[in-house]
Image (tube, rainbow, N blue to C red; front, side):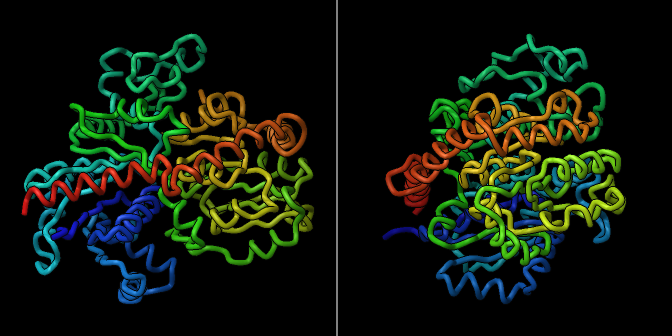
Length: 484
């Protein structure tokens, strides 16, 4: 008899982590897995509030789809009113101590569910290593990032031993100093590709230590999955650069794309989404709109936001701008005087939106982005070229590879070495015009449409990601049978 497979999926708190892990959970549920999805109480509450539903209504929706699904939550140790993005180091320190709590919650949960087959852990949850060991199941490490960043982060302590970390200020400005000692046959890595929290000039001891700790535990895994596709990042050889002691390492992404291609928009938001922007997009000419969005944690100075606004105004193109109220370094955003009136006929500003639906809309011709991995993948999958303005973590290598390796985007000169550099309205204007018209923009579109096709083929039956996911499922079946 076929054993019932039970995957415990544990997600970091944060939009960029919950979304891919929830989509992956659905892919497994479609293949007959019983899913226990675990995240923090704060994250779960945000998801429910944004969707305007309670936990019972959510459970019914999954049951109606034929999924065997349950949600468990764990406290993160912070008071409800505390922001979870203001001090990343503090948050990660708290997450690293959640192992005993997670184990207690799992052991106290309903015993009528099938035995746990594996723990699928967000790659930045080191606390799951001890839990998997104590329960006696394999720990599957799931990277919500690109392979290149995953290899960089996994080898952070090695880079430290070789003198590449912490990154010196003079190295950030050097085009000659390249890192070629990493596994996976990556393109040469520049010091500016490394995460900003490894930079000497503004190291926070808390976050620096937290991520070096995560790097050590990221080498403890029985199986590795990456939310990317082989055709984008060098095939199986690149993924094997993540393999620890020969454990399997497979690209199984983009994990949201199978749902999207079948007309199911399974995207999970922690913010209430504006529903009017799609109607506004319907009224715009095909390929004419610049979509501007810099994620849920990026902040800019008030002066920088003014320069950005004036550059958007000067470019002459219609734009849809996702502008969080707290984006001005925690203050309420104040735009240049008269800006709203001067651009009202060709601009729409919203607090949050359904990004995938926006990027897939025919009127959208470009994406001004922070280059988070979810946003980068969605732009590639929808065939929308990018302007990258990285702010944190993996965004720097995503931006650089988008421009120099995959050749599907542009960047803003100098922000890779100084994320706080003032970008003038003139630079904003000229970069947008390069993206939206002329030979540069045309070539970017040609390149990204080829990758869009490759991504679609990868997740279809017979494609590389589809086959890799089947391999993972088959391996879990063999494991479960061996324990019967």
